[in-house]
Length: 507
Image (tube, rainbow, N blue to C red; front, side, top):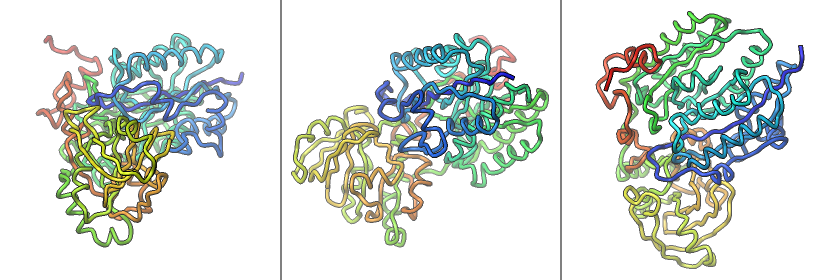
């Protein structure tokens, strides 16, 4: 058999449709944009696939599959990954789409495409941008297989399922199996090309956007579902099971949790298992996430956590302004509360390019008076005047120019770009030791729980009113009633409409 050639690429961004900030090509360039030989080297053993974020992710896993299966040439195209944000501008989307087509054409004949997507991307002028990316690739590929990995917060749709031959989701939340998923999806694709398996698929779509408690895979509410998927895959006919728990701030008209099952030439089994997993998911719909306290109550919890503060720090997740779910990172509400909490040593981030411009020429050690926020989303983030000392300023790759302001007990990290405060390095790289703070603010919903393990002794989530509040999704419009925002007694009638099995009623 001739050596197979499989092209591989990534175009990934998670969109918060409520954010007024558009995602531009510069956001990808600043965060993660690699191509060709450099991308291929990054994905090899010993390489660093996503510098600053993940050593091994889906494309590294795909390369492992290529090496393990043999007889395959992996053809690198490019990898573009941006921090969650508002929708892609029309120009940004068109540039990435056209680059995918151009690089596939330049690669010469290939047998398949391995593509990493997030699954919750919105773009101006595009109803289903990720399905449109695959459709564009097919102008070169024709009907050759396209295998796609997705975040488990993707929103599955009829258009995505029709466009893609294989879909494999993460199986952990917080996500820690990127490379494993890439390897498993890659192996299925390679075995398909070699004629060793014949993938058959089934999926279900639930009118459900919030449930499952915290949705953490190893906690009691969701653990039985993820365990059941592992059990099902012990059957050699079952190649992969996915559960998508949806990014609820995604502006997709048919939004909802979904299940997707890939079997080896067993379509009836795929249908049966997709149905079973959908029933299990629907069964946890009434287990809601915990209610988060406001700033005053959250800071009272920090004060009571004396032992945690003595031996480490307390992480404060600003759950209303989570950059990791697409918020702008401009909210001043928790910053204001920490300014008033003079008995607590705290670190916090805020995004304000205007303030960076204003103070960039000021020598370190000088006093400054600035007005934070009120620029990107003034209706939600009113201006906040502050006065303090400019401790330091420095350029960074992921966050643009950064300045640290000493505001007394609060040390404030002002960033030019999105302040994705997810890892301790966000603070350590600007000279702030998390172990010396009573509380540090993070802008990540789940991943910080892993990254801050050596430092934090307690995590406290705070509600400050913003675009990443769970109920903020009520501002979006959907075609169907969705639980828990609307009364929904059964999932099957809506699922059958979404999958095109029955027509929608006339308006």
